Image 1: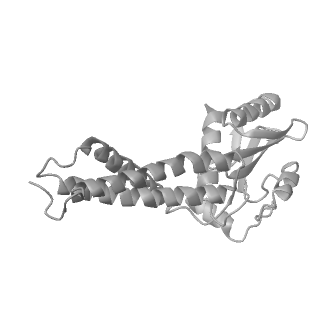
Image 2: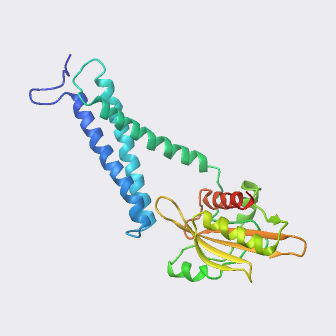
Image 3: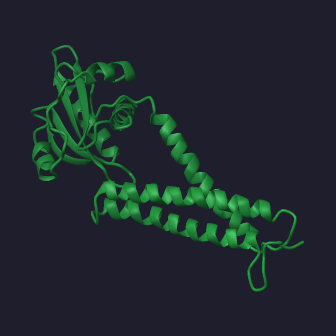
Length: 254
């Protein structure tokens, strides 16, 4: 059985669809492989890297649709010789599409905030990080601005609060610093005399930079440890700062 729509010298429709799907998938995968690492390396901004990923996702979604049509069009014939590679195209498109949907669903309930702290009354303050944010022309100010975000944070992430440790100040500071280093953050300052640790955290794919400050205090009865994570750009962080704090907290307490 052959493609009735094919003419002499023209490949059957399923093969034409398969070739289009392959081409789109290859371009999309190359964009994904290049956009993030190059943005993280500083070749262009993280926003451009995310744009590249968005375009790649669209191309792979289109490849998914065309690939499925090619497979369905070939189900009663043997004209499509590269069925296996078409299935790989469909798998790649489906994988990226599911990843994007899962990310959207997983972050849909996150409040539109970009500054998260365990102490909303007297949050830890940046010192050495200020110069870095200014040099990067960060749109978000380094000061903590409670424009209603504190209540949004408390409602969404009630587990983010001051950590109380019953051990020596020196040990608590060392453990807080070790947990920050284990997170892979770039340590900007570690000042035991002030109980202050500052670091820069970069997102895994395109390297968006967020800033973190940890405060360790001895209140006479126990050691109080607070942390703050703030994005340099964007009104909302899709829950990234809260997730970062909770991951660091888990390392600290384990």
